[in-house]
Figure (cartoon, one colour):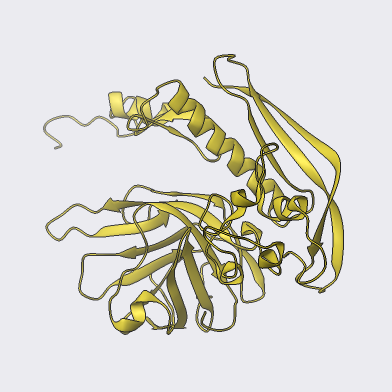
Length: 123
Length: 211
């Protein structure tokens, strides 16, 4: 499992922008994101962006996903076998069935006796 | 949101809009077609290499206004297999493939979450399959533009979108679900390329015209 600590810091640097909807110009602080992996063999990732930029939270989430992919490469995990899950930001095995109910059904097709037994004569 | 179209721009203004590293940032970090400045219409004034002027970034925009994702592809089984390309997180016809980093996009006047945007590449009448998790047709009349990191790859107005099943709406290059391609898209010459099978895409809606 790859885990990391996320630090998002507001800097003193200000950035100009124009709001598309109002046409008004504004200023917003530059934010700095630092992702520090708990495994010291992996590299620290940094990213910066204006605080109120449209899609800010999505961009931060996306950067974490990109970093996770980079760390997988650094750990020499095969991208043919494993992938970085976009929603959970975890490394998963391709094609692996993780739902316990599905696994149970797969191993024992009628394990929960959903289909009632019938004797041979009835069939 | 965009960068201002006049006055002095700093490298921090540019970095704030496009995002970027926290150190070792240079003007060369923000060439068009690079990691941060995509080749969308508003950014065409930014050079891809060589000399660059801060005024080149006037009016440019980062990816915040677009849905953004990574394409892949999958093929159905059976005698007549069909290869679907783009992003399908629903698994409409195959297992889910591709992923959205930012799935928010406004269609008409309503904020939507795009789940699927694919085209098939096998049958003669090629079709786009789209899923906004809405059970009624919402695409007709709307313009859609899809950009790779380096080019416009789809410029289309949906003229007759049709629901295919629960939340899956379709448009195609032939009836009954219809669309019109823009003059600058690769489809206008009759060469129908559709969605890519890999790489990053940006999806824009509501531009109100062809690019």
